[in-house]
Length: 181
Image (tube, rainbow, N blue to C red; front, side, top):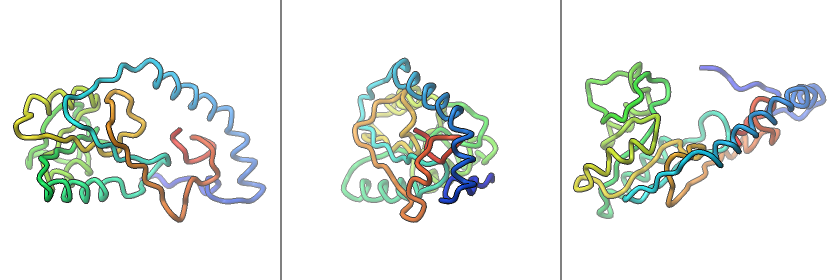
């Protein structure tokens, strides 16, 4: 796993200089993100979509929160299903995760989620939602893990998770800071 650059979270002259030097590349990142928001066609699922995401690169507990949400929703009578892109895996999907899959195929998070409940891996979240809708007797709610910067699928409810210690770092976007947007 690649570690985040220290200058993203330090408040000294050297760190500020590194961030400023990389800032023009951050502007490119921001511009591409804006274009994606504008031009990607959003699909509105027939099921409600709960999105769990963050603004920072790296972990903030999205997957544990998705699992916690799943358990609560299941307990109160919903039939949720996880939808994830399968980060780290080569399968693009949409595909229902099976016990025979491995992390090279679908990523570690999808394997973990599938131990808790039904999980669909799809790089294109709209296609994943359509696959889930084909089984709407089995599911009535989609929990999208790490989908805040995914613009393919309209989200009905969003949870933004923030690391209470790191917060937003130096408040710059990638690569001069830790923010995805």
